[in-house]
Amino acid sequence: MLLSGLKNLKAFYHPERLISTISPSSIHILDSVSSCRAWRERAFDERKSVGFVPTMGAFHEGHMSLVRRCLSENDLTIVSIFVNPGQFAPNEDFNRYPRRLQHDLEELAKQRVHVSDAIRTLSALFLPGVEDMYPSGISQDVAAQKGAFVEVKGYSHQMEGATRPTLFRAIATIATKLFNAVQPTNVYLGQKDIHQALLLRRLCKDLLMAYPDADRLHIVPTERDPADGLALSSRNTYLSIDERPFASALYRGLKVAEVAWEQGATKAQCVSKGVAVVEQVKREAAMVGVNIKVEAFEINHPDTLEILDGKLHKNSPDIDAMPMVLNGVIWVGKTRLIDNIVLGKLSDL
Image 1 (tube, rainbow, N blue to C red):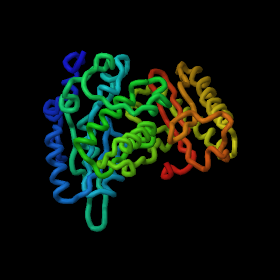
Image 2: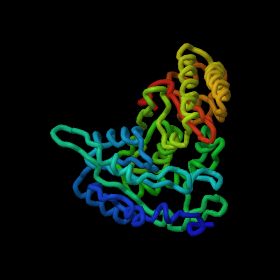
Image 3: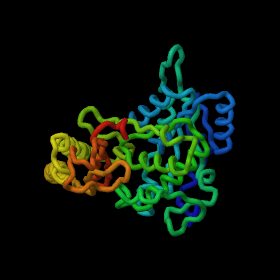
Image 4: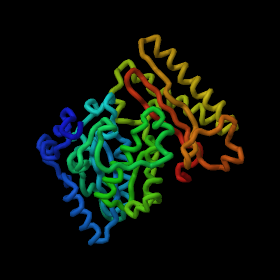
């Protein structure tokens, strides 16, 4: 089924209906592609740079760090909120995904950055409807989809794509649409979703995009809970009170694997040490009725995204000081958590 067949889809994405549910705000809201393009045209005429932070809403400090970085480096900053139905398989959590537009507007309104003698604040919020973003309709069943879609061949089956094979087709498609609408000078993405960021760089490069140029797609370090290092994520709200203390298991495992890598251990040894940490937390969690499952724990090459050979180590000729991507996925109860650490300098990716 296409657009009309998705339960409650229009209720989630009809801009006028969404805007009518929130309190008045000083933020300039662009509720259609046409209004976004008109706004961007004025920025072109005024020769102003435009920074863009694409999101699915339900903001936390990780999102706000992207916004502040964007504000500091661009004349104008625009943020989008669009929970892309194409990124959710029929059995995934589309209806459950948190939607907190009033909260998001309040958080955006607080963001201010001093640049020289000026104070920069958000210039616009792009809040498109699903009919704007998918003129031909959209189904969560890939076999039933019609219209134009974008796929980055050879970069979508690794890492998260191993268990979510259509995810990056959906991400590449919606990112292309958003980039075409906003035409940003710079784009800011979080390191937590590093597969997505690296794939979109490849997309921009291969499609010869000027807005943004691939070199202007910036990966910003992950924001973490200062208490235990858990990567901030909108999905953390799914965790129960009993589950939350064990949610940092993946990060703890990644840190142990990172130390092993820096000490010269092979990839296989690093992965083994990291997984052992998660398995220990898993046993502790089971004692209080919390289930943890390791879905993935690997080191991938940043250019090809392929898994490194188990015998390679930091000083191997094939590595040549290039930063690698140590990453993992675990389930804590019914909540799927992802995280990664760049083995080397993030700025060198």
